[in-house]
Image 1 (tube, rainbow, N blue to C red):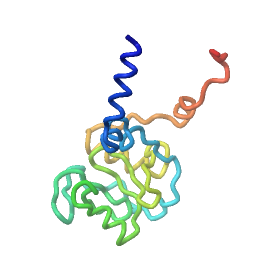
Image 2 (cartoon, rainbow, N blue to C red):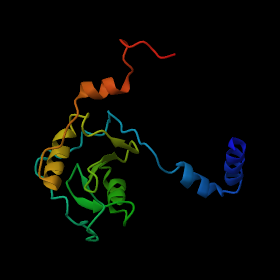
Image 3 (cartoon, one colour):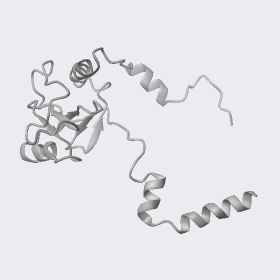
Image 4 (cartoon, one colour):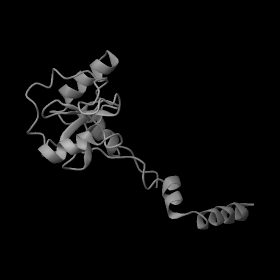
Length: 161
């Protein structure tokens, strides 16, 4: 029976197109590790305590969702999955860091990476403000110590091998 399951699985894999294989096995998706450091934070607006509300439409096309807040000039523009206005804004201005009003993630266009808004101190105030505006309460921040200890195995415990 185990041999049949194995051969059935192998048979399935040989008949998948490359794009199908990527979709099923996650080449285009999966866990994304957010950076805990970014060299592009110097150009932030001096007043990120006062930001547009999360349901602000795109400043250029008025699209109501998938919008991002530029953390340099505080303009709200749509994502690359709508009309790419925030991406165009980055290319025209080099304002690299933006906060998504959809999921409150922070993206650095220059690093081509998500940034950890809870661990990067410069991002915490704007992330907290956006969270309060979106959900009506403060976010449940994790501590730096707990995130470091979760990533590392304990040295006090004997290994199971």
